[in-house]
Image (tube, rainbow, N blue to C red):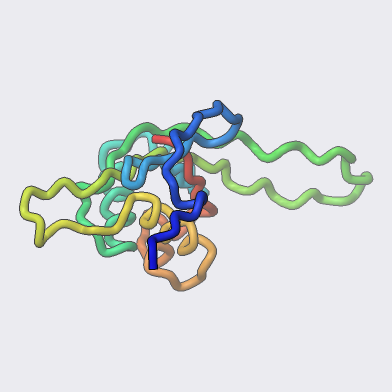
Length: 159
């Protein structure tokens, strides 16, 4: 039997079209994540160094990876929730405002350990996805760490 080449398998040069939306992440390029945490931004800012270190350790611990795979980028106050359109009628006490949240931006990096056998083969995207899932699962490793217990969500984006 002669090998029949199906047209689908031929590698045609791909034309890159700039589409709106997240850029395609290479197989294992760095990935950015934004961890949204309910916390007092002003208080945390006084201890930003320690807070950043705690976050990196907690993220690494949650996916059982080395802390070197996580790099702290920046931290800022999350935008407040939009004000409700209709003011409450007189006599109705509005619920207390939730704590203003803060956003910690972190990059997940490929494992570049020179010792191949110690290298974590999981791509950055996979670790990002694992973390994003853990945020919504009560009792997950991520939500048992003191620094990330109040995490609300994790957004995945370009580094």
